[in-house]
Amino acid sequence: MEVTGIITAIVIGLVIGALGRLVVPGKQNIPIWLTLVIGVVAALIGTFLAAAIGVDDTAGIDWIELALQVGLAAVGVALVAGTRGRRH
Image (tube, rainbow, N blue to C red; front, side, top):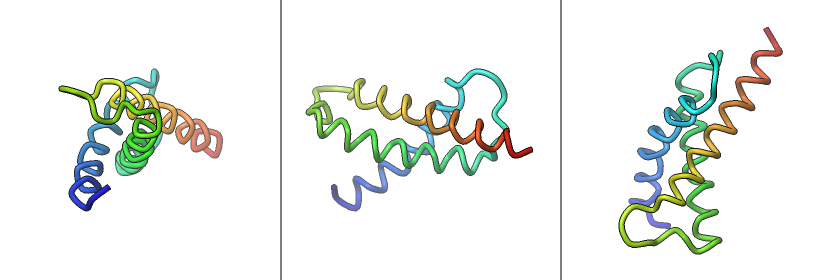
């Protein structure tokens, strides 16, 4: 992965975090910056998973990779919201 790939993953991760938050039902009591961080991490992990299973470079839009990323972001948002919600 090159520097431009990492920068692209960060930018896409910001969108992925927002999509992951939208997928999780209910209100999440986590700050938006944490949602964006979760999205960036999910985008990077999703990209590596897609490469590992061989679906990272397809013709057109990489829907499977995108679904992996959004799914990981949704799981991350749900986990963080659940753990932060118990502390209050």
